[in-house]
Image 1 (tube, rainbow, N blue to C red):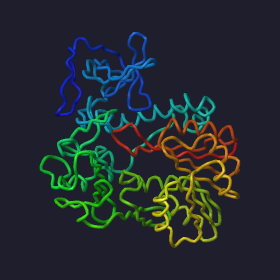
Image 2: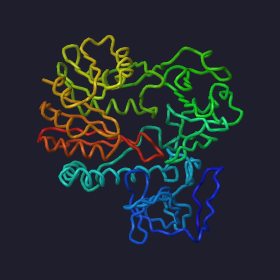
Image 3: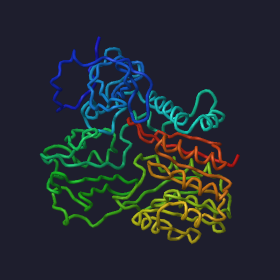
Length: 438
């Protein structure tokens, strides 16, 4: 018995006959939300499938070294396949829900396998051996956050971005395309965002935007949701410029060093999962193991999510020096750290020279780089400071693997690794790695 993967409701099937589409046996998951298959000896990265499945595919991209494809018919389904929680992110649909057809426990197993394999393949066997010494045969694990199992991983996102389609409806881009597909549902979004009524032909927000507009919706932990249209605050049914002047939101984060209060620009960076800020603060504080009076260098410090608890952990006699490339993020951080004189906020690119200048005498280095990672030059500058401990927060396993390899070359090995599933129903996840000099 065959199975048709869930597809967007308004998708038109390709004209090619189904029987002309090739059938492949699906192998292991790979970084990026697809699984590896082979067709006539060629590597094919297949989305919307699961390891062990036999599927019919539609090739979406042909390159000299590999092809990309969507599974459009499942001939032999995996026991971990479930009805998609977001059909509009299925084959031919929008990006951002590529694991929506996978049972939640299997999603975490998928991510754990990807983490282990990426560390070995890109970080090298020595890095893989270091991690294996920590984790044992089970390998590194990616775990869910409290409450996600009960909600099926749905309704976790407190920040979403939409683009307005040609017909004036809000939607998202088709995967690997500039086409905008109008949406009818937002199953991953926080209920407060869903209740704004941004979607559909009768949305009260349609007077605030035009085709091509960028819409940002934020559901903070404290206060009312905020909607920005092309960067400007908006109110349903009213033209932009006539709405509220509020451009920032307030966030409250429980932590081991007390309740943390933040003010963040609506268009600024903040973790999207409702429980992610608390989870990351707890993980970083545990990894850093700070004592009062110590000195911390924090790189890529953003709006101060980690800076504030780090400053409290080292106390008045300690010191936190930060470096962040985004001037707007540093402005947010100044608001959030205004009553902490033990913090020196720096604005500038994180480069080997700036790391060497700002990190002299630090006991611990904490870094939370963008998806590309810190890079070998920055990691080399960090290890040259000889801190007692390095805490690396990463959102991409390949980038983390490269940074760990560079750290190992500088004399530091992994002594702790935690994987956090902050992005259910997608291939993304977060990692917190602790390194010490070997």
